Length: 384
Image (tube, rainbow, N blue to C red; front, top):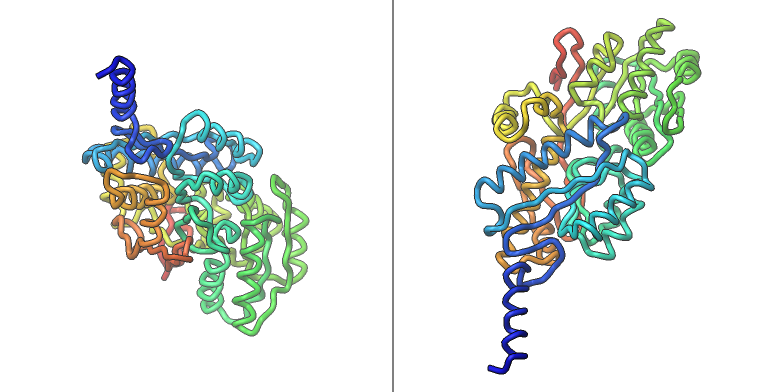
């Protein structure tokens, strides 16, 4: 063999030992790089960090069992501080610096839309456990999947239940003026039309607002005795406290963003009795004991108390990723994983309802249940 040929052969062998045959980014013979960005600090930090913990538990469990067809998952998550501009920076870093193969988390609705062109350009398989914003999934995007249900449907199911508990409720809403709050208002309109009612008062507020004295006073003056909350947990807590301050006691209803243990303390006594709709069981539910055992095995002790419902969904999302990758065998490509994600049917990770995707289905359709805040017990108690 001529020297040049020997050199070419040596180079090919060296490259072959470190890169997958399919040569997609983030895949070598020994690892698969999976990335994400979430807030670790600020009002949304409780959600983002907990989601990352769930992904870490699943990745550790998968790696402990030999990885995905012998490749270990290398999980890298950036902190975007819940700022869309920083989400774009984080996404660019995940692509250019960390050379990711797939995505396991996107922090918010507007944040996801800000980076969507990059996800679509690179055809990055993405499963988001944090947000169910309509614009992420309708129409179906080739590589973007979500676990959960729409905010509209969550509010519809919640209001149906609460309205049936007492005759003659007069409904209103106080929601954030964005892609997570407005759909809750829309859900309220839909279910009230079904019930032959109309909202007496619908109010929207800007992101970052902290004083809700005017909104709460207007709701009382309008005679609203049942309110759909549509902000971050800290803002919803501020609304509850303002209502208590003026002796106003309507029924309050929220959806899954408020179903985290820390919110019970955030709400304080003013939150006792608030209805919360979710498709994930309470962390005190017996069904989650095996998950907590995994958490104690794979997480530092100081992180276990930081788990919440987002940990369960993120754990499930990582397991779905692994299942779709596994089905590709050694020839792992982004296109192959995406095709396998579309074939997922009744996938059961053990801790929430089985989930399915489809050719044009990117957001799972999960059935939830109604919980109620029991402040004295420090728990969310099932009422349905």
